[in-house]
Each structure stands twice: as C-alpha cells, then as structure tokens.
Image 1 (cartoon, rainbow, N blue to C red):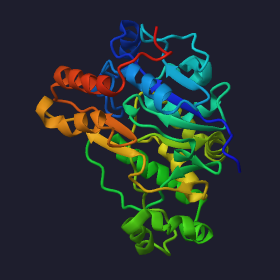
Image 2 (cartoon, rainbow, N blue to C red):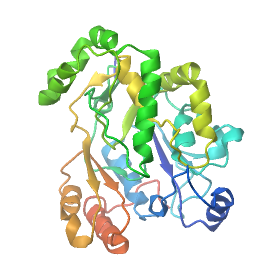
Image 3 (cartoon, helix red, strand yellow):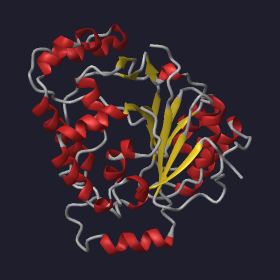
Length: 338
C-alpha cells in the first residue's frame, strides 16, 4: 500500500476553570462518590496547549485535519477558522443519552463517530506533545497502526485505581472473543518481532496460553483505525453502552485501550519498538525535581513526551518552567493561534 492515505489527529481538552462546566459537573457528582473517580488535578489547565498546535504544524505538517474535542469551551487564542482545524463539541458526535459526561471513556469510545474523521487517526490526550519531526510511517506503516505487542501481567489494583480495573475489564472482553494461542499462531512474526528486543521474551514465556493476561502499555498517543472501533461496538455494544452511561469513571468501565488490545489481538498493527514514539514523565515534587523533563523538551530528546500530572506538586512553578522549555523549541505562533 502506498503512503498517500490521510491521517488525522484527535485531541481531547477540557477547561477545568470554566464555571459553567463546573456547575454542571456538580449537579451530577454524587455526594458520596463510591463508584466514580473524580480527581480535581485531572482537569487543571497547564496553559501550554498552544505548543501542542505549534508542534503539529512544525513537526507533522502532513496531518490532514486536527479534530479538537471539547465540552464547548475554547482557548481564547484558538483560530477556529484554520482550514485544518475541526472544533468538535461532545454533542456533535456522542449520542445524547450519554451526555453530559465528565468521564473520558464515553468521549474516547465514540471517537469514530466524529464527522469527516479519516479512516486512520492518532489519538492524543492534551498532555502528549510532539517535540521533533515525525513521519506518517511513525504512526502507520503500510496502512497499519504502528504499535508494540508485548505481553504483561496485570498488577492488582489499589483503592481508587480505576485504570487498573479498566484493564481487567478490557481483557475480559478480549478473552470472550479470542483464543490467545490461536491469535499468536496466526500472527507469530508480529508477536515475536526482533524489533521488541529482549521484551520479545515476555511473549515467549506466555506462549501457549489461551487467555490474554495483559499488554505492556505506554501512556502516549495511539494509532487507530475507525474500523476497529466499529468492529468492537458491533461485537460488544452492551458493555460499551454501560460504560458510556457513567458520568464519571467507574470500576465497571472499559476504556479506549480495549480498541488498542483488539488491534493487537487481530494482528491489525505493524510492530515498532516500545520506546520508539516517546517517553512518559511523571511530574513530581517541585521545580528542581523535574529537570529531566525540561531537558528532554529543550533538547528534543524524544519524538513525543507525555507530561503526566499528579497531585501534591508545585503546579504553578513546574507549569511555568515547562512553558519556558517549550518556548525554546517552539517560539513562533502557529496558524492555529490568533
């Protein structure tokens, strides 16, 4: 297949400072939040989104369109008339019965319903930044999403760790639809690709098992096809529907990694090294505790960095230092800014 197919980017964003959004959120937030997961630091604004757009324009100019998914609020500086930008409100693509939502799961699981979305797209959270030039083939090779298929054992979830529960629920659905041993046999060269290095041994260790025990994950952008989402919805509409009805994260949810696992199980991917696309940085402590992050940005050490927010940090100091680091490599406004 030629590499002349379209690739879109999808990014989700929320303005946690929006008073209207806060009021609506409070209407639905249970007084005793036993099942939902609602950490305030998930919604705070690092005020660095402009660098995401600058990076896309500078480092991936081949992108056909950016779908900017939002509750309805917009950054004041955003040029909504840019021909490569599509502003997508939740109500534009998420079925009305799931709205309003304050969980990322209904948003992510319904991405394929976005109008005019390319058949191949890359999904970003707003904490994932491209910081050096990337090619189409970094995300799709011969039409297939690039990814790594490396077996992993699940860790027991801790109290409040709703992501771990989602992983378990994802695997339950995967094991209901596929026999791991059969799928490994069918796509053996992808599972045992030398491109994984020593990580390929993990797949060898678990070879012969009939159930998927888990996959190694990176909290980075993922390449998807619309067909994958359509296939999973057709097969498992009931559980996806139940997840999308939850206003906040729940232990009973699946998440968008189900779509990734489905692509891996069906061989609908092209192998790439686990660390190829980038690195996740867990922000911690104060300014001086995160110099490895600033260094990585300023020296463009990776293709993509994820700046993973955490509670109990010097948020103002760290966020300002991160902006200064971005400014060193992306000082010029993009056409996405007014």
